[in-house]
Amino acid sequence: MTNKVLLTLANAAMNKAYVPYSRFQVGAVIETRSGEVYSGCNVENAAYPEGTCAEAGAIAAMVLGGDTEIKHIYVMGKGDLLVTPCGGCRQKIREFSSADTQIHICDEHGVRKTLTMEELLPFSFGPDNLLLKN
Image (cartoon, rainbow, N blue to C red; front, side, top):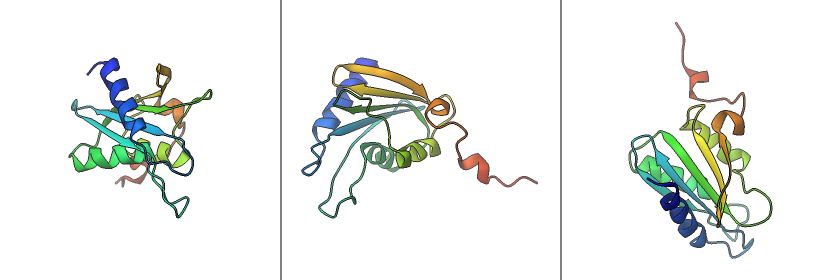
Protein backbone atom coordinates (compact mmCIF):
# COMPACT_ATOMS: atom_id res chain seq x y z
CA MET A 1 0.00 0.00 0.00
CA THR A 2 1.32 3.46 -0.81
CA ASN A 3 2.42 6.06 1.71
CA LYS A 4 -0.25 8.43 0.37
CA VAL A 5 -3.08 5.93 0.96
CA LEU A 6 -1.84 5.11 4.47
CA LEU A 7 -1.62 8.83 5.32
CA THR A 8 -5.16 9.32 4.03
CA LEU A 9 -6.37 6.47 6.25
CA ALA A 10 -4.51 7.90 9.27
CA ASN A 11 -6.08 11.30 8.65
CA ALA A 12 -9.55 9.74 8.39
CA ALA A 13 -8.98 7.86 11.66
CA MET A 14 -7.71 11.02 13.38
CA ASN A 15 -10.80 12.92 12.28
CA LYS A 16 -13.06 10.22 13.80
CA ALA A 17 -11.42 10.46 17.24
CA TYR A 18 -13.82 10.90 20.17
CA VAL A 19 -12.13 13.66 22.17
CA PRO A 20 -14.76 15.88 23.85
CA TYR A 21 -12.45 16.67 26.79
CA SER A 22 -8.94 17.23 25.44
CA ARG A 23 -9.92 18.02 21.83
CA PHE A 24 -6.60 16.30 20.92
CA GLN A 25 -7.30 13.98 17.98
CA VAL A 26 -4.94 11.13 17.13
CA GLY A 27 -5.26 8.50 14.43
CA ALA A 28 -3.15 5.41 13.80
CA VAL A 29 -2.86 3.01 10.89
CA ILE A 30 -0.96 -0.27 10.92
CA GLU A 31 0.29 -2.08 7.85
CA THR A 32 1.14 -5.66 8.77
CA ARG A 33 3.83 -7.88 7.28
CA SER A 34 1.02 -9.77 5.49
CA GLY A 35 -0.09 -6.50 3.82
CA GLU A 36 -3.33 -5.98 5.75
CA VAL A 37 -4.21 -2.52 7.09
CA TYR A 38 -5.91 -1.65 10.40
CA SER A 39 -6.92 1.74 11.83
CA GLY A 40 -7.66 3.19 15.25
CA CYS A 41 -8.44 6.53 16.87
CA ASN A 42 -8.22 7.79 20.40
CA VAL A 43 -11.41 7.55 22.44
CA GLU A 44 -11.82 9.57 25.64
CA ASN A 45 -14.08 8.84 28.57
CA ALA A 46 -15.68 11.07 31.19
CA ALA A 47 -13.92 8.94 33.80
CA TYR A 48 -10.66 10.57 32.72
CA PRO A 49 -8.07 9.02 32.02
CA GLU A 50 -9.94 5.83 31.15
CA GLY A 51 -9.81 6.47 27.41
CA THR A 52 -7.80 4.55 24.84
CA CYS A 53 -5.06 5.63 22.48
CA ALA A 54 -5.28 5.43 18.69
CA GLU A 55 -2.36 3.00 18.56
CA ALA A 56 -4.07 0.66 21.04
CA GLY A 57 -7.24 0.73 18.94
CA ALA A 58 -5.35 -0.11 15.75
CA ILE A 59 -3.49 -2.93 17.52
CA ALA A 60 -6.77 -4.36 18.85
CA ALA A 61 -8.26 -4.26 15.34
CA MET A 62 -5.13 -5.96 13.98
CA VAL A 63 -5.31 -8.80 16.51
CA LEU A 64 -9.04 -9.20 15.90
CA GLY A 65 -8.24 -9.44 12.18
CA GLY A 66 -5.84 -12.29 12.86
CA ASP A 67 -2.54 -10.44 12.36
CA THR A 68 0.28 -10.07 14.88
CA GLU A 69 3.22 -8.54 12.99
CA ILE A 70 3.46 -4.78 12.46
CA LYS A 71 5.55 -3.69 9.47
CA HIS A 72 4.65 0.03 9.59
CA ILE A 73 2.57 2.14 11.93
CA TYR A 74 1.51 5.68 11.10
CA VAL A 75 0.60 7.90 14.06
CA MET A 76 -1.05 11.21 13.17
CA GLY A 77 -1.83 14.21 15.34
CA LYS A 78 -1.95 17.98 15.01
CA GLY A 79 0.38 20.56 16.51
CA ASP A 80 3.85 22.00 16.27
CA LEU A 81 5.48 19.18 18.25
CA LEU A 82 5.79 15.58 17.09
CA VAL A 83 2.86 13.43 18.25
CA THR A 84 4.72 10.26 19.22
CA PRO A 85 3.24 7.18 20.90
CA CYS A 86 2.96 7.42 24.68
CA GLY A 87 5.06 5.06 26.82
CA GLY A 88 2.28 2.50 27.15
CA CYS A 89 1.68 2.47 23.40
CA ARG A 90 5.40 2.12 22.70
CA GLN A 91 5.30 -1.08 24.72
CA LYS A 92 2.11 -2.25 22.97
CA ILE A 93 3.69 -1.61 19.56
CA ARG A 94 6.83 -3.44 20.71
CA GLU A 95 4.81 -6.57 21.46
CA PHE A 96 4.00 -6.96 17.76
CA SER A 97 7.15 -5.50 16.19
CA SER A 98 10.69 -6.33 15.25
CA ALA A 99 13.64 -3.98 15.74
CA ASP A 100 13.21 -2.70 12.16
CA THR A 101 9.45 -2.01 12.34
CA GLN A 102 8.94 1.57 11.17
CA ILE A 103 6.99 4.10 13.20
CA HIS A 104 5.98 7.09 11.07
CA ILE A 105 5.14 10.23 13.05
CA CYS A 106 2.77 12.35 10.97
CA ASP A 107 0.58 15.39 10.84
CA GLU A 108 -2.15 16.17 8.33
CA HIS A 109 0.52 17.27 5.82
CA GLY A 110 2.55 14.04 5.82
CA VAL A 111 5.29 12.11 7.57
CA ARG A 112 7.37 14.33 9.84
CA LYS A 113 9.76 11.70 11.20
CA THR A 114 10.30 7.97 10.82
CA LEU A 115 11.88 5.86 13.55
CA THR A 116 12.55 2.16 13.87
CA MET A 117 11.19 0.33 16.89
CA GLU A 118 14.75 0.11 18.20
CA GLU A 119 15.09 3.91 17.95
CA LEU A 120 11.69 4.56 19.55
CA LEU A 121 12.17 2.15 22.44
CA PRO A 122 15.81 1.09 22.79
CA PHE A 123 16.72 -1.85 25.04
CA SER A 124 13.04 -2.76 25.23
CA PHE A 125 11.49 -5.67 27.07
CA GLY A 126 9.53 -7.93 24.77
CA PRO A 127 8.34 -11.46 24.10
CA ASP A 128 11.89 -12.74 23.56
CA ASN A 129 12.71 -11.87 27.17
CA LEU A 130 10.15 -14.39 28.33
CA LEU A 131 11.22 -17.34 26.18
CA LEU A 132 12.43 -20.25 28.25
CA LYS A 133 15.91 -21.41 27.35
CA ASN A 134 16.89 -25.01 27.99
